[in-house]
Length: 240
Image 1: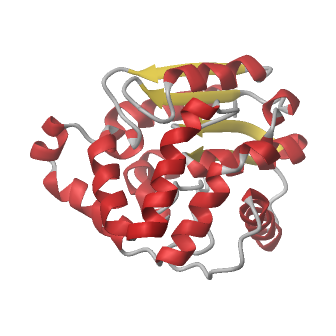
Image 2: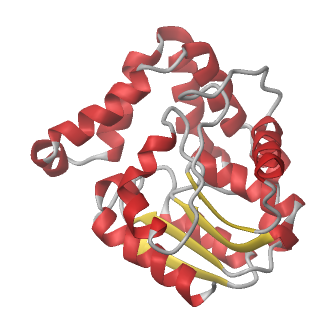
């Protein structure tokens, strides 16, 4: 399981009980995040190489791959290069073949981080990822995410975010090479990984299901695990 930029493997905590009941679950910190080392980042393939190295270390040949946001983009690049290794692919709240209009907000946030650091970006992320009702009902869950974002090394975060912004030139139409069952999931109100982008992924995949979750935003797995978890578990059991 691959987390989103600025977070770490613990963002999957709300999914662990549901998945560990039936699967051996591996979740890890991307380079420059959590407890993983930083390396020079060339582009998104730097993070794909990390995944390949981890799988080699664990002696894993075939896998069910789950990625959210930047983790989903890493998953796409890996899937395009090694489609035969996938049993299933779950792409959550992620992006694919973005238009310049869809990239504009990400380019602004990258510039903001370079100019002003992590604080304004973390504040904006919390505003995009959680609505007022959620922030009022679950302030501690919101604060956990804000704290994780602020704890990042700004240089490592910026390098990773830049790789995410420019990833489409490398990923291209990778999903057209994927033949395994796939689940593409996003929130109805996700402003960046929109339902339109999710449908674009499904259109390129050979055997995909689309799940648009009503009322949810970008961090759906954290916002509503009671909705997300059964959807993932049902998909995996149907395609195990």
